[in-house]
Image 1 (cartoon, rainbow, N blue to C red):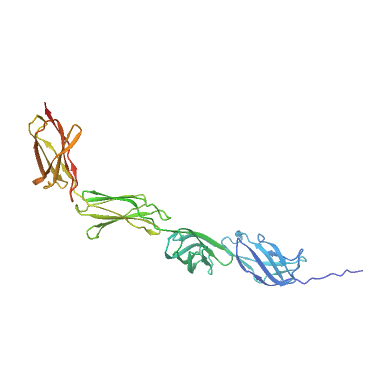
Image 2 (image 1 turned 90 degrees about the horizontal axis):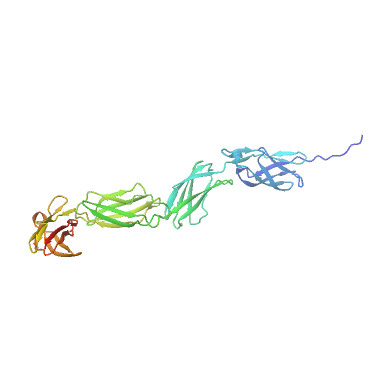
Length: 386
């Protein structure tokens, strides 16, 4: 019987493949070198042992195949996966790559330590995450943000030296590149310390001072975490006390006990993750509280009749304050006039005699001195009969 001739094509062979390692979740160009690859149309095709991997945009010669390969992230979500790569011609001739394609989980960055950094600093940045390769690199798209000294610690940590000299305040990207197409990025916030607290006020009290302040005009790009108040003696700068607030919502602190009559300086600094800002200052002098009394020898007198006003100036330690200046005032018809300035005697006592002609109200005032706070007596009315 008659026979028909037929052609037997040689089977394809594969000599090499590049790359042999890539990150899952990527699209990349795979190059396969060999012989006897069927040409398009309907030429040789790549087959993968994991059917979720696809190839497209083929460029084929008899000795080389190039195609864009897409690998779903799920192929190697948590552990590396090994995939067999075959070249299959339309006549079912096929060849298997001598080296399988290894697909690695892409790296992830969970956090940076520190999470924020000050300007003009050089420090070690700890990059924490998963699936870092030993040959991974670290970089930043910001050229003013210098990264060097990359050190692979483990699959979960890479350390690098970061220099923020000349880096502006704001968010700066940090990128880990595993070298197989897998990359991860995280933002490092670069900040300044806060400016000085505003409105520092020192209120002087008996054996103590109260320091008050308000938030700085600028937090430097990062929330204030605390304030530190330092009290020193004005005379020699020696340290007396220091206090750091537990939060950023505390705006005052009382320092007690201190020595009355001694001047103290108070400085307040605001702190964020970049450190302490400049100090704002104030000063105050604790003083003894005083009590000034006023007594009338008579509440009602006839016109021209004498009446004695007297009292005592006592400090909070119950000692009478002698040698102090006490001013006596009279209020008559809505007008107040100073009548006399007296000097207290032993025990802080004072007195004066006058002959009022009209009904009036009297009070005494002590203005205070270096160690003693001022005080005002209660008012006393002397009524004059017609």
